[in-house]
Image (cartoon, rainbow, N blue to C red; front, side, top):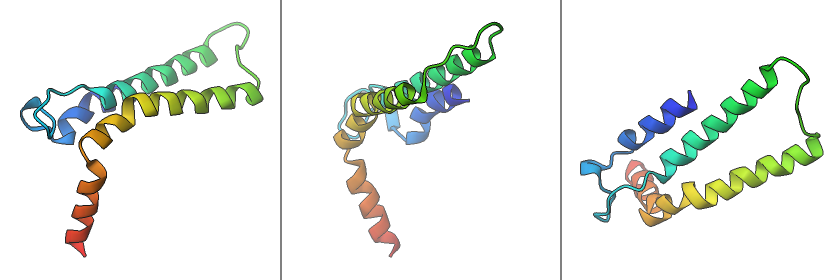
Length: 99
């Protein structure tokens, strides 16, 4: 499901003509972020349902690894397009127009 969301994320974002707001071709960073996380969740589910001995890490190790993975991929793939395209400023302007 997350993979479908990742693939459909780019068209839904409204990049007209396949370019971002500054005339550059899209980099598909957010799409890669969503697809990567979807693949990791799918891999985790497959490993949990696999026959044989269950493979898992202790929670004290798994939690920091998960948080580190989400933060590292978020800062590398998710946030740069938002900052590059001034998404926060656009959202603020949209909210100002509502009130």
